[in-house]
View 1 (tube, rainbow, N blue to C red):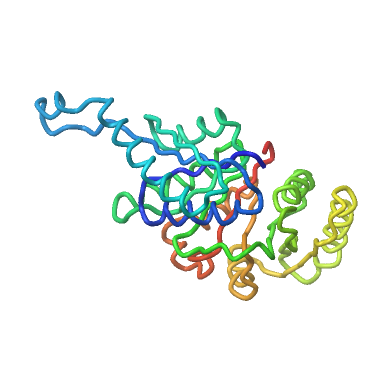
View 2: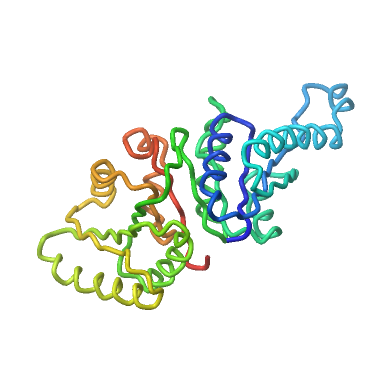
Length: 277
């Protein structure tokens, strides 16, 4: 991993995500790009329009970015930081910037400053997680990096899981966490056949990657959402990993009416992986 892109709106939640990124990066030593998107606000009248210039807005964005960079360089002197500002819709320009900088990972907060901004950044995070061409690690407002000991990957029987698990091992190998392959079946009668398939996949991934810290967990739940909620509450992994093939599950987790019911969502980061990552 060489480059991590960290979008910011300069809120406390974005600052927490940047701190998490820096702590996570201590052992990896990747370059961190602090990124801010901006737009020209709609003025109340034409006189205000004349007073607004793109240069002023861009200069203001870079001023805030450089102030943030200076603070973090003092705390993390061994990390290389860069700053970039770009005009456009946040979800679009974040993805474009990640491609331009060949980012290996995007780390971003899941909420903004409150009110409308909170809703918008929450929406932006969900959109980026669904559409970005690189893995996206979403950091809840209360998340703190305390090392990486366990990662839970929710999977089905899709062929893409092998590719995702290979990439997950590569992503995590610096910290060597236990990777738990979590699969849900609807009834006990499905457990034995499910365990055979998941164990075969585990054995293959362990062999291909020469990585032994992989375990499986087969749980019974008619509703995957309910089952995952219960699992996370009980075992509290450091990161939950979702394949973006799980669109319906992903949408449930980030639906605003359901998010409040997810006890783990307040502190457990979510890593979104794509089949094409």
